[in-house]
Image (tube, rainbow, N blue to C red):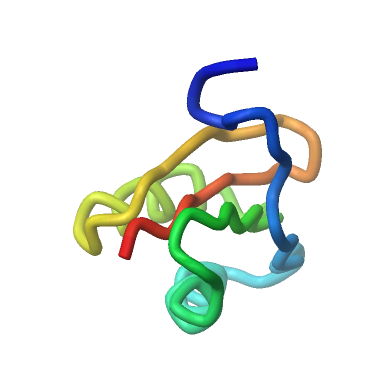
Length: 81
């Protein structure tokens, strides 16, 4: 399998369901640096703002937004550096 997932699922799942903006992004920002470069963190967040906030945070911080998933709903972020 090729493409953005590189054949692997997320290294970790961060459950932020039930938390409102900005808590999912704050938790993402704290946890991602603790993972190895190249690892994917899936953030489960049911706050509608997360669909905009998480990709925007990735752009501002130079991290890779991999995908959004309807189930969860979840957002995959790959640590770039």
